[in-house]
Length: 41
Image 1 (cartoon, helix red, strand yellow):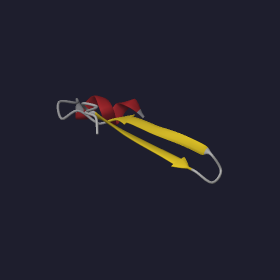
Image 2 (tube, rainbow, N blue to C red; image 1 turned 90 degrees about the vertical axis):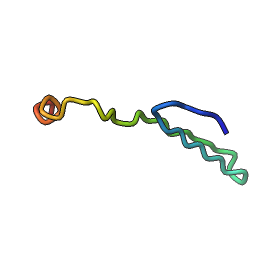
Image 3 (tube, one colour; image 1 turned 120 degrees about the horizontal axis):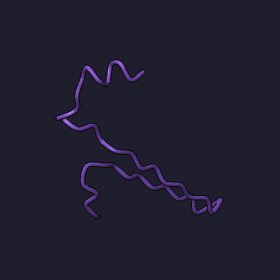
Image 4 (cartoon, rainbow, N blue to C red; image 1 turned 45 degrees about the horizontal axis):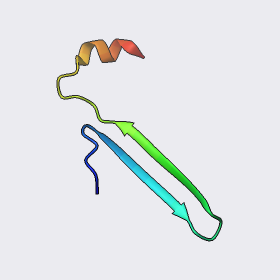
């Protein structure tokens, strides 16, 4: 197991089809500007 900091990584591998994939995403910061985030979308 490795430490990724403020993100999450998930990897999967199917031995039968020999196909793999990885999902990596950043976690939100507690110090984020909520009002700026509301106006972003």
